[in-house]
Length: 213
Image 1 (tube, rainbow, N blue to C red):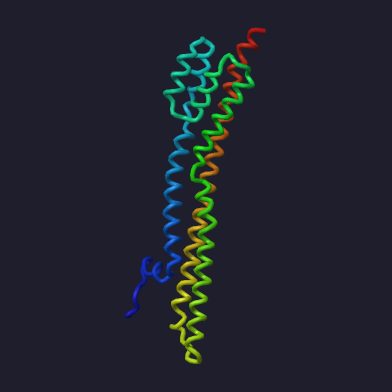
Image 2: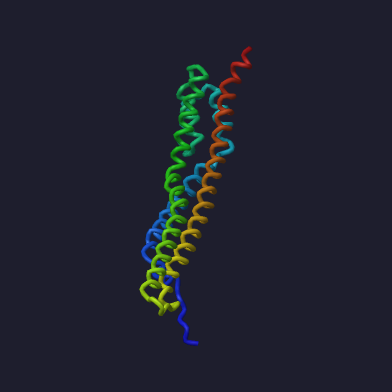
């Protein structure tokens, strides 16, 4: 009836100093995920009428209006199209290349922080295993000092360190792994949208040529 209940803070303390980097890296990973999630979510929003309006402006020769629309639209697709419109009059290959370069830059911006998150995903379980080894060393050291008077309580500190750090490292590593892959999946959807925009824009540029034959 008099058993004490342990809180998460108590468990973290018993896990030893290894819990400090595990917890700190968890906060860093959470910040990266939340910040990137909203950035990527914003980039994935597409105005369904955007390309239709660009098409009408280009066909009507209203290049300035098309550029103004692109500059007033805060999205990767709009910035790609703006670069393409600014290159009108040059060979289609040059226009296509310029748009692709902008697309690569936009994807690079979206993937900011991904290497750090991937590193944390791999480092968390390794820190947990490091805590396991430290805990086992502490337990065996306590046993060696006790001689023939070995008691379970002597090894409890090392066992706590081993088990708690292992659980913490694996749990945070698994969560970071799923978080990282969910962001990668969202970026892939943005890439697909950018490729579709590029194809549609190049088709718009080709339409007047085809109609004039």
